[in-house]
Image (cartoon, rainbow, N blue to C red; front, side, top):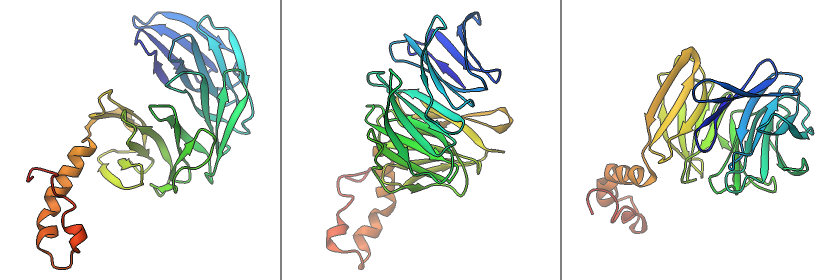
Length: 271
């Protein structure tokens, strides 16, 4: 795992040797964060760049200042951790995802605030919504789930894959989800679980995703050192194109009800 600081001037890396490291953009090592007893799987900067959070195979997450001093230990998980992330809005909460099948929400004192439990296998990935009010998780069981900050499910689970969901991310506007799968695909969804797009052509599993700040592109990394930049249509563009496809069907098919016949009025190129 690699994470840029919010201002983009620092880089944190997670190490298989149990050490997280802080670097400047010239490649100079600034600090080491030592304390984990197994590989570090994930690192995350706080929004104010004062803290670094780490998640490890030793079943713990840890909070550090940038001088390398450990401040808090988070240790309720029963199996290795996969991911850790600060809440984006205020940075006052941490979310962790684990192979014990749970995601957990914490305050920065190490107190557990919520437990999100529902996956039938390990939780591979987790992400806050841009406003920090929701969590999304992806698991070994091939499902994606949405939660509020009390750990309560918000929607019916999204059965996205036949096997592992490797990564899941909210779009910057919070209206779409991107998922990466072990089945060599990347998919785009709305929050009701409708698939909007599917991207193929990978030679192995896709490990990670990242939206561009404007939400118009999606960067993906997969097996075989394959990195791709995908164009992503916004919801307005998707809706417009879809309506252009079905406009004649809605207008002329006698089986379409009167209430549905005007669904696309004012949408698309033919207004």
